[in-house]
Every structure is written in C-alpha cells, then in structure tokens.
Image (cartoon, rainbow, N blue to C red; front, side):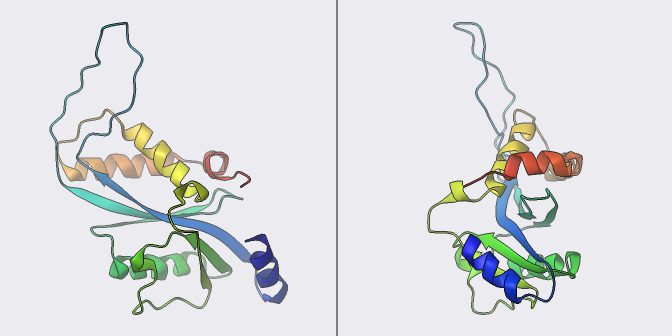
Length: 178
C-alpha cells in the first residue's frame, strides 16, 4: 500500500487521499454487549427482535478523521454505485484511493468508477486490516442496549451519533499503524 500510494502521488496532478471504505448493517435486533454486575445477577434488557434494518456505507480518512456516510436499504452494486457517485461529489478536488474489502458488489462489471477514485482491495477475510471497522464497533457500542420500536427512531439516533464524532475522535479510532 505505501508503495502504491507513493507511485500515485508521484504522477498525480492533484492531492492523493487515502480513505478506508466499508458497510455496516444497523437494525432493530438489539445490540448487546457484556456488562459487569454483582455475582449471580444477570442484566435485564428489553428485547423484541426486529428484522428491519438499513446499511451505512462509509469512508474514513484515517490520517485526518474526515469521513463520508450514506444510508441505503440494501447491500448491492446499485447502492455502492450511488455511494461512489456521492463520494466523488464530496471530494472532487483530490484523487481518492478507497481501500475496501472483496465484496462481490465492489467488483461488479456494471460499476462505473469515477475518474478521481481508485479502488484498492484488501486481502480476503481480513476485516482487521480495515480501520473503519473500529468506527463501526464504536458506533454499535453507543447504540447497544437501546430499544427502538421503529426503524425511523434508530435511523435518527444513528445520525445523531455519527454527527457527534469529531475529526479527532475518528482519527483516534481509525488512525493506527498496520
């Protein structure tokens, strides 16, 4: 990756930025985490499994903490194309390298990759190499143990949490040496 970035920067006529991209499913199924309690005491949580969900498509620049998110109903190449189009509109002045996993919809032949975007794929089955996974974990930690009756309520809370992140917080979550 560092070698590829150096080559891109050497021949680029505009700034080259590295973003890490991934998708996250958020739904009405309650998110649970471990809790410390007294010996023999089990934590009680309201739970009514819900099978409605939406997907967050996100890209994070670990070096600066800048980020870009879109919400979609599905995880497919059509939604990924919409994400790419909106992403390129958000960062038009730079050549953007997106590091992402090997999802089939990322490699669909019908995708039209914008001129200022370059896709670099991680090795198969290696989510630990994608820094944006840490952001998803933190997001889910903040949504854990909350009970939402409607998907619209969960969407609203997710948007509030995403807006509460500062560049410094995102950089501390995602900016680490491999």
